[in-house]
Image 1 (cartoon, one colour):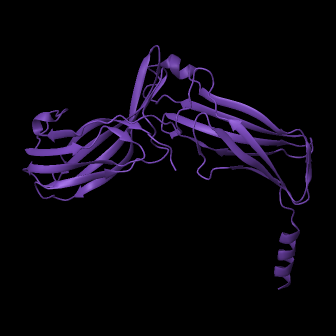
Image 2: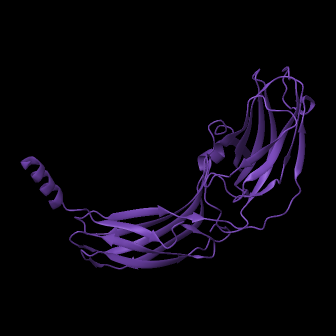
Image 3: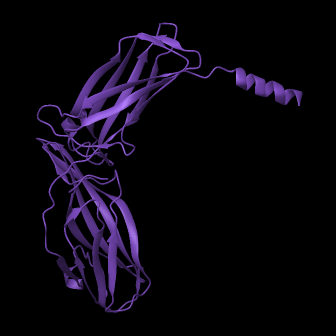
Amino acid sequence: CLCLCLFVAAMGSKQQPNEVFIHLDRPSKKYREGETLKGTVVLKSLKGFNHSGITLFMDGSVSLQMSAKNSGVFEAFYNSIKPVKLIGATLDVSKGGKITSSGHEIPFEIPLKATPGNSLHETYHGVFINITYILRVEVKRSAFSKDLASKTEFMIESIDPLEPTDALQFEITPDSVENKRGRSIPDFKISGCIDTQICDIANPFTGYVCVEEAKRSIKSIELQLVRVETCGCAEGYASDPTEIQNIQIADGNVCRGVQIPIFMSFPRLFTCPSLSTNNFKIQFEVNVVVIFTSNDLITENFSIKLVRSKPTQ
């Protein structure tokens, strides 16, 4: 009991560290170009402290990375690759003073305006391309005290009109399969429909698949979402497709002539509106994959364009 009391007393007497963090006015942390980023810098301290200045730094950039398989092909681009700066701002929120033990909150406002010649692309976390927006705060203290710092990521949404398109009907047969490479492909006929190839990123990707004929039993039907990231320069461009997600839409030897619905949501951050610039591109594809019990695999590829037509609520 005595040891427990001493432990509790020691914990209670231990001084809590000084803290600083950023609180944005929107819980979603989602903003758009032309709006104003608002929030407060919150400082907390057990006994109070002096500081010589509080500064906010806002940075938005596109980081590019060439894949290992292409680094030797485009050596000049690989060696000179630099982030593309989309936005940058510095704001002094306090010249100096004392933070009391009751804490302090300092409001701030920063306009979201891109650097000349650029626009604020939507936040995106990819494999070889990343678009990020960071807000950082620094509290300067005396030479004998450690500076305080904190940062938070906020999201940018890019809004564009959605162009209406007709549904795409498709049919997959042994004759339509590419890259056969001498494989013995079983006789089959699969039809289907994709409701639109220009998709609102906030809505699900929909359609259907129908197995009309198949000489061999089917093991699985899957839907694969793929990102195609392209980086390059005057020497040329290199594209790298990578899988974002794979969902199974049918399991086992499905009934013939039955329409199997396609319903897939686009994951946040790992997808963004399709984008094409001088230095990089972000594009998306969907693969319908049919796997037979003989482990023969048939893939039909569809290019899609992603658009965000309205802000997220």
